[in-house]
Length: 87
Image 1 (tube, rainbow, N blue to C red):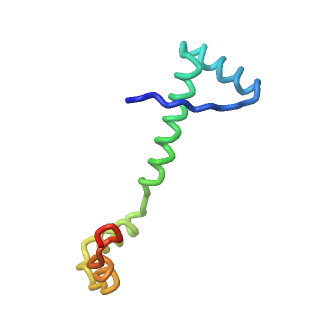
Image 2: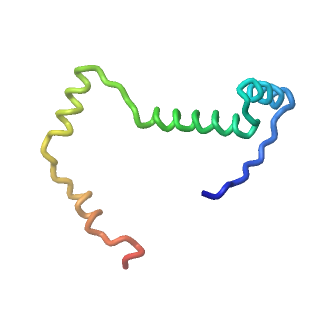
Image 3: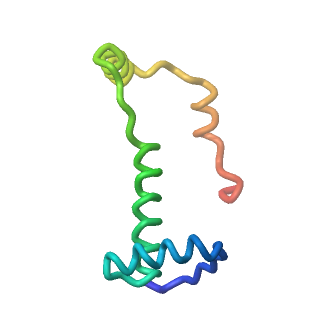
């Protein structure tokens, strides 16, 4: 895995705060920032994939998944159309 560079400008007070927290945990500034940013990014993405439903909503969701597929002529035509790079 190759390393990429990210440049960031922040106010001195924020840099000092980050440095203090990193030192408290025995980490470098880079390690501290990377760990926190990656954790936050994972949480943001998880929130987009996770949803909660009431029991009634869950039953409706399951019923929709279990229902037979209805014909969709527009989708059928789209899937039958070659992609531009296939022409």
